[in-house]
Length: 374
Image (cartoon, rainbow, N blue to C red; front, side):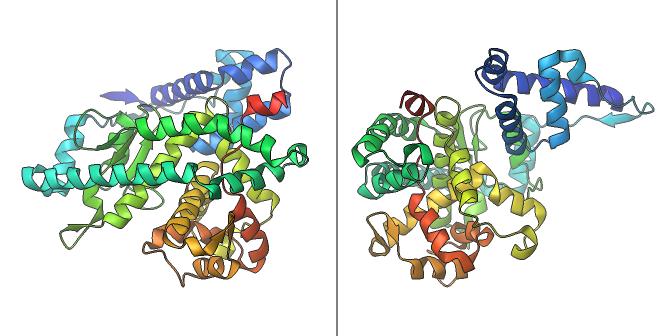
């Protein structure tokens, strides 16, 4: 399909505007009714822009236009001279063509069946471990520490706080059980997933191997990115599925009652434990990725749960051994998968006491409904 560049820009603006309206109906309504302040409205917009990877200036223009009407939001710079560009849409057919060329083993029935069997078994195991973590005393203690770190809840008793946890637990367990985990090359996926998993279409961390798709509410995996010497790296594959399940929990509850990752990220910021991008030596895009609300939250929660499973002796009553945490930050201990400790690169080892305190609080956030009623 050949369209003018100016027409393409207009389409992108309209799509971004429609997406914003769809996801911010409640915020716009609350603002118009005087139930939230403009400051809160812009804060929500900024969080949305960061999560979607949309430049802040663009998001601000869209948000302002959502209050004034579509014509304002669609206004942009004057159209550039007519130029023809190719609009590339990744369809299932074009994706599969590229995928099977890059991963021919996926077309071998015996190899494909084995890969799917391993993934299915790992999914059951990982889901079970995550569910057990939410039922554990460690998670309860972490939840108490996290809630008590907030000024408006610091005087609440442990019993009062655990009542909130008991409200969340059934919903979380339901999400864990119901979220599907599929291979990218079977069934029908969204265009965004086909585009993200297309061989050669790298992001800040390289080729996408696993992702949670908010649109279809399922986890999609390319098991062939976990092949080593003809064998699946079950540890790395299982750890990836684990992280995506945390993303599924975060998204599903954050869109209803619990701003989970945002509040957890705010707690880390309040502890002043982040290194600057220059100090980490990471690229700006990788640093932004690891410090974003959703990624930082999911990766830290995954790290804590894996530590609790592999080294339970290092966590007592929800509190981690600081010396062991420092070993993780220094890369002396990798938990069998270096990608699991990568998120620690953005944290300051010179503030190990503060990092330990935050690590102990990694849990779930309180529900908005509960906090409003308290």
